[in-house]
Length: 135
Image (cartoon, rainbow, N blue to C red; front, side):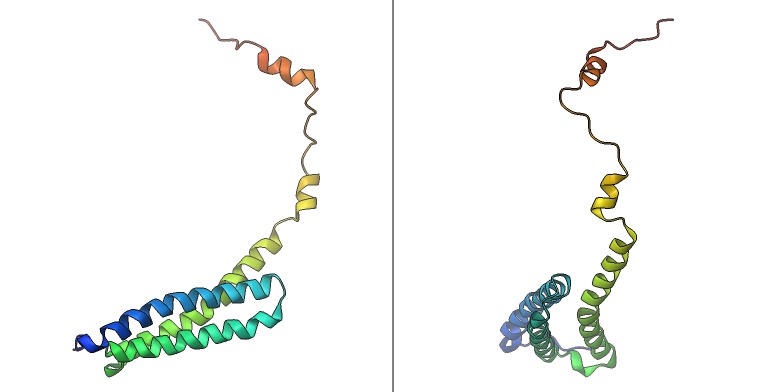
């Protein structure tokens, strides 16, 4: 059974859990921005954010006594792998989804042109009363 968090470790657990959220979001943001805008110089910053996330996970695991059991240790490792792989998987999924869609200029050419505001046929159609079927 896992021991509860000691009062002395409470602040370490609290701040490391908050740091996990912040550094995980920063890693995903920098990774996605680097890949979508083709700015490779941001990738080292993304990996630095992941290293800070890794350190925060280790601090949280130590403060909450998660390294005493193989189950909880494997859960910590799974969390680290998930935080690393999720931005890669989302980017891969988005690229393949958008590659299957037509580009904007192709999509626009498939539709009929919009009528001009001076086209009177549309106004006549809108102003006609509805013909109801009376039985």
